[in-house]
Length: 437
Image (cartoon, rainbow, N blue to C red; front, side, top):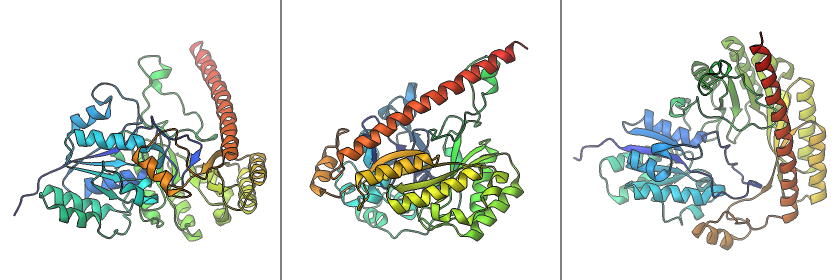
């Protein structure tokens, strides 16, 4: 019997240097630059906790210097036996580059995981850079594949392992120590989070500002990797781990699936009140579910903002989102959502009216045009998968809607610069006044 060896397993989120235009909105959105994908961390956590193999996580979107300045150097440094590369349709060229870097470093097995695999498995199977695919809810397949590689199993056994049935979603929190919480940031969206307090090292003017998590924002998922709502105790345990790491900004949401029940929310709010730690929360709520929560009591639990998720710019979805936004604003909560243009059945003027209605209701918007891999013109998508380019325009995407989304994104970016500039001026004034005392 072959003795199992300990594998070096590297989980990679590629860069986005050659990504598609950010105006394209895929059914699974691309993550902000300062946030690792929770499903990728769940796969890494399963390998770390349920096997004896060594696990490393690398995010190529974060600027680095020295030995980790390029993916080739990272691969040469870690020498992974197995590499799991996160693939998003918006950054396919970068994902394939990462896979080639892992192969060049001598990885025996290069697997693809992520939204591309979940949304367009037929296209992902065409990628010659990969040895196999891992859907998001495939912890069991990953562990079985690692077992095959560690015992030098045959190729047929590896194919059977990767094709195994999906296991039930795990309820344990992700291992947050796989992530450098003192460095990572969630990209600011709307008015949440507000500018965090300046670190003590910056106030005393010695050395670079050192932020031990006070400005980090961590996503706390409400659903497991199979899309089912997590038990309340699991979510509270994840919040407690953020408290231990000193991360007061916590974003509750992520994933798609059934909505939590009113009893679930009541139990979560009761647990938050019992924990008592000082925190700043944003929660993800569909407009239809907003009536289940006592909005006026959320502030007592640290909730400062509500994210309504994806909203189609049509009549009924916009009306529900506007009503939800008014309720949130009355309760003193900031509210945001992502507006997806190009849903069937609505004209451009109707969608423009929907965007204007949401803006008038005080909602912080992110606009995008719907794009789905493989839809519209499968041949065009296949040609792009064979030779991905950042200039690719998904078939079926309307040019006028793209222009509308781009105009709004430019206006939003200019407004954010003005807000950040004013905040920076106020911070500088506070430092000057404090130094004169």
